[in-house]
Length: 226
Image: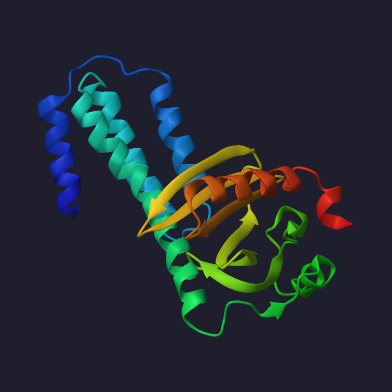
């Protein structure tokens, strides 16, 4: 039985679509975006199945209707990013509400990095940004969309930055992208085989500066292993 939103989108595609061949890169763009955002979600197979249904619909009815394409893209791609940004923001807020901001409290990455051994199935990069005015405060284990991830905690004056890190599915670098969610700024990127999300109540410029520095260090393995 189809969901109501499936019926509505189907009707829109049938009504607005024109029957001509869609651009060759259209399917690749949708599938690529889905792969990048579905890494952690246990619901990924269902989302991918839904994506293939609508790729078939677009191939059948064409991509001539900009309205139908926009609706399809919002259903297939944007919700995945919204779900992820919401989960990241929720974890950040939870960490600030109680006494569970850090599991290991230390500004020494040589203390923090070994702490993750045996607790995660990967070794997260632990970056020292004290010289740039954003010292490491510690770290904890967290869960994002059902998967354990590393949460590295930094201070920037009175502000807390949570940096969530886990392995990237394809290992390809991605430039930082800025989002805003419920009054918090988020920046996400991929580098060094890892996917990273930084979130804070810092202003956008300062958080982007943090993300730029963190990404540069993640790209240089020697800076996170010495």
